[in-house]
Amino acid sequence: MPAAVRIIYYVEIFSSWCHWAEPTWTALKSRYAGQVDFAWRIALMKPEAFPDSAAQCDWYYQRSGTLMCSPYRLNSGWVNTSPENDYIAPNRVAEAARDFLGEADERVRLALAHAAMRDGRPVGLLDEAVAVASKAADLPPGPLRARAESAAVRKRVDASTAEFHGHRIDQRPAFVVTDAIGDKAVLSGLVRLEPLAATIDAMLADSHGYSSFAAHFGNPPAS
Image (cartoon, rainbow, N blue to C red; front, side, top):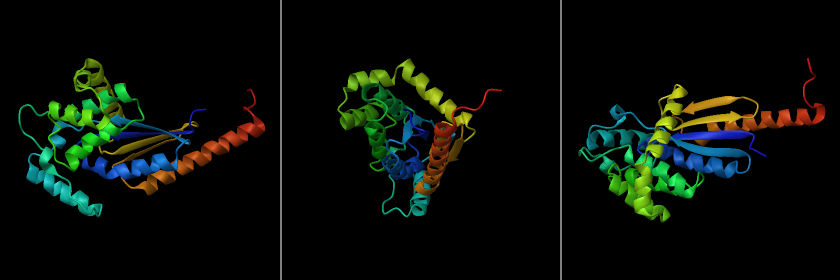
């Protein structure tokens, strides 16, 4: 039986707020295992959304880290203005890893984000992103790189980014929660557990209520 509720997490490797949301995503998967269908999608940031310098990036990290009461500060070392740098690269590597690991295995995505946010590694360079991903999940670097550069992966990343914007939102992380009875909730920019859990609880309760009613009374009478 398919899960009564589905949640899609829209994420960008270089989004610091997605980094802060990861504990919530982990907690949700644990709390609602077997009840909710979980999926993640890449939602690329626009080029103008990236910091112009490491100093500017540090300012944003000080703000988000303070708001989250974090005991550590994020690392701006990934900011790179060299011509070879492509901030899309690690997102495509994360997407490509699906073809080797499947939907549920998020090791590559998490390793790339950690390499950037915590270690300051320049994963905007494709070679660096592939090296991080290959080590994280024991994947062959050559085939992984080829897949990340493929037209199919580029098309999927572009499609999931367009899907994200189709919800008329622009803040990551974003969570789109739907259920089998047609309800839909979009939470954009929120990273804390409570509003997401409350939304899922409400949808599960309603979905279970519909199932109970159907068991007692069946389908609606014919017109």
